Length: 152
Image 1 (tube, rainbow, N blue to C red):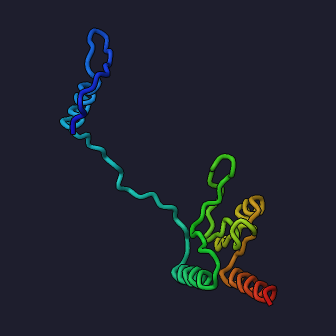
Image 2: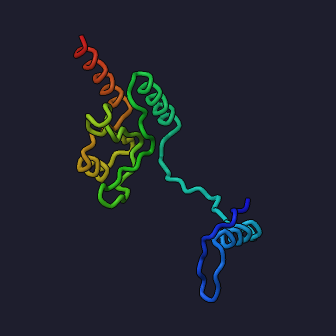
Image 3: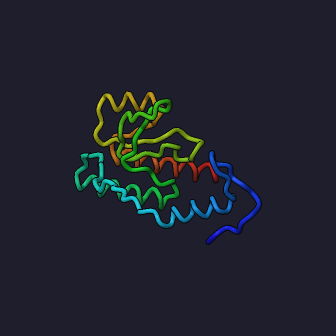
């Protein structure tokens, strides 16, 4: 598509051409230019999480149950980051980083490979955390019961 010629001019050192001519020259150059081949990496970078098959199945079961119970979907293999720098401090198996009542409750995390460093990081970041699927499921059930009792 070509622009219609108008009385506008573009001043280029040493010459004066119509704006429409300049636009048409530019568009022609784009149309006839050789495409540039961009090479994208096809390798995926993955963060390894050591979870046995049984734990993985239990975790998927917990996620399905939590969603069916009305909780927001947790983030799996969630990176807890420094708020100021964005640096990854630790990775947890599952997290509700905005809380169970998003924006109204503290963040929740599940760490199946507990160590003192992760505990310290999560405490400092304000997370309530659990170290087994059974304990977090019990906590979630308590939240359901508390919500039911308060509604009655």
